[in-house]
Image (tube, rainbow, N blue to C red; front, side, top):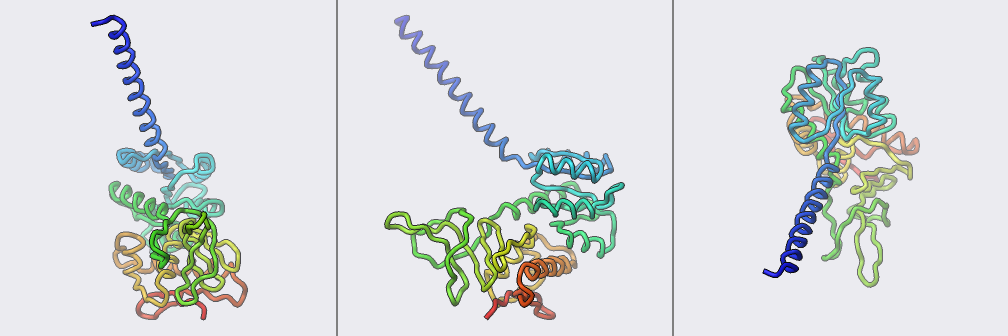
Length: 303
């Protein structure tokens, strides 16, 4: 075999090896970028380590803070994707930590509590916690709850529209043109040459606007800050005006599992959602979420 050909072949093999290495390196970096970061704020070291172990086995990155002050500092610095928060922390308790996190961020919060009182759990949900677990709990259930919360928090929401065939949907965050008088559905359209493209989906009822892909809500032009579950409750109800949803149906659709006999979880989220919507509107504005006594809730838009 010619020496120059052999040398060329060797260089080609080396180039191929480096190319494959680079490609796998890029793939590894892309996977690493998508790893979710979980902040565990728990003063009991053994519980924190068990949760950390199970989460890391599920391919999450974890951070641990042993008290409320350290947890707040770590949250501000690291910007985690979710917080697991113990209710009974020394000095700065979990309720206060939850309140302060909610003052500046919508990070999903899974609250852990040894307290059996329903009032304590409801108080945590009212402050903005997305879910709770009562100690003792299974570490596998913690991981399942974390995954479920993150799925809901990252889902842009789904809405079937009645636009022309061939339209495509993207995640533009803008609001749209006036809604259809009968359905309340509206889509933001951008003219691109001769074809029309849908860039975002929106629900609009009177003073209320819901930009679904952007997960943004406005009342009277004022932004309303909602937790992940509050937004999901609102979109679920508003996407089917006048349809009555039982508490069990909302639990199953939004929480993804059934709380054993704890339909008040839905009541708490509905209550805080109503307060936030009405606080953003003018004094005469009334929340469109109505109670159907003995059954559940429905979305009754303004006439």
